[in-house]
Image (tube, rainbow, N blue to C red; front, side, top):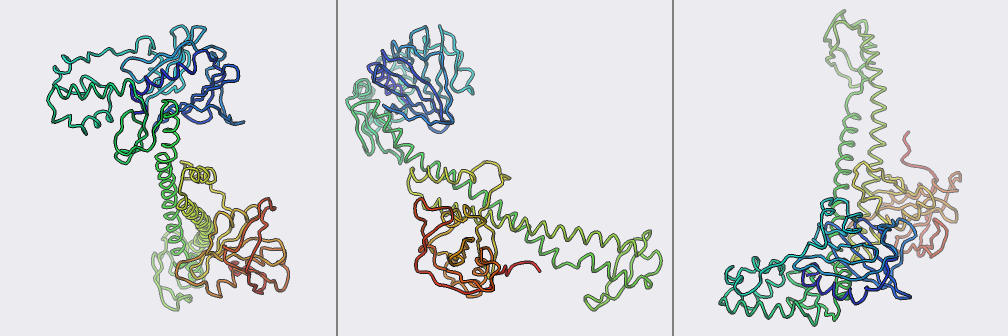
Amino acid sequence: MHLNFYFLRQLAQALRTKVVGMQVVTAFSQHKAELILGFARGHEELYIRAQLGPHFTSLSFPTEFKRARANTIELMQEMQGQTVEDVVPHLNERSFYFILSGGYTLLFKMFGNRSNIVLYKKGEAIRLFLKKFPADAELDPLKMDRPLQQNFAAFASADGNLRKVYPTFGDVPALYLEERGFSQATLEEKWELVQSMLDILEAPEVYYIIRFQDKLRLSLLPLGEVVYTFQEPLEAASQFTRLYLSETGFKQQYEQAKQQLERKRYVTQTVLEQSEEKLQELRHNRSYSQTADVIMVNLTNIPPRATEVELYDFYTDQTRTYTLKQHETPQKHAERLYRKAKNQHLEVKQLEEKAERKMEELIVLEDALQALSEVENYKQLKVFLREYNHLLGSKQQEQVQIPFRVFESEGFKILVGKSSQNNDELTQRHTYKEDMWLHAKDVSGSHVVIKYQAGKSIPNTVLEKAAQLAAYYSKRKTDSLCPVIYTPKKWVRKPKGSPPGAVVVEREKVLLVKPENPFAKV
């Protein structure tokens, strides 16, 4: 009921006692579909925070507001300095307006996902907060009252149909009446039930935040589970907004982030599989260069203008049938195959780079989903959304900056940080307590991580290769042997304020290895 006519009327009346006589000192926006209005009188301040998004609309009333230094836009500057002379609720409509000095009027149209705030000068709309509703410029705040016949005669004529006589009730009052036997009552009894409820709606002593049908609601009526009660409508609206965003809003944003990450992971996984499949095909098929070699060795054995010939393939030690072109000499045919072989080599290289890049992106997305699964409340979600904003863009082709290289050995993924800043990101964001962490002992170098696999121990051969990488990507790269420390990530911590890449390691073991990249292509 936070957008219900009866509540908005109470809200407007409460605002009148607060804001009349105050001056408009600011109107600005920091987020899409959010308008902050500031009022002041001496040292007294009041803010109206209007959130007019497509999924949630509300008004809240903080007594102070810390404006961000950046990304704010000043709006509706014409009304700044004007004094609020009155606050007027509309009759039977989900809206109200401020009468300001200087001939200005400020309309609050609270129509759910079509809500808007409009500024008028002498009856003409001069500013629409949400320009996507251009028809709102045609609204006249002085003509938005809806007179309705709501006497017993009208009620009887409608046969007790609430929607026809009281279209402003909404679902909560209707459910409240139903709990009191409205459907089974006689017409006269129904009328009495409605009048008793109207006494509460028109002069509520308490404002409720309830949980009804698994939803958090603001209500003028005690229905379902009463979570909180308030004496003032402004406080009730503010607390409802805060609770809704921290609970219901949390669920919506959590699921949205999860769906975006899972969709990107699916696309990345699909591209990776397709690249690996194509690589497998190119690597195992007979290369163009091998076919060209066989033709060149057998030039004297190929009849002129032959389109098909059987030749001995010394690569497979068997006779094969080769297809030729009638108007192309065998030598020209071989030259063309050599050119294709060169292109095939480039294609393999490009596919290898693409597969490696997609593998890196896949790990980043899986780590983000793992981090999201550990988010439990709205505060943690806000931190997550800020840190992983670069992964939550709508464009699938958005380039993800990967802070590590990826190698794979015996099914285990080995991650190697690319710089000191990347080391921090790798260890703090992409590594979990069961992963194995490695680093060249007593010198600067890359953080190296072996990703944990449930139910599997890391083979010594994998551990040794990871240690070689840690030595290779360190200042001991040119040494003949290098000591490398390793320990589960849970024993690695980063002190607050320490330089990039610096960590404290406990319970480490040491492995002596030769610095080299065991995965280097020969």
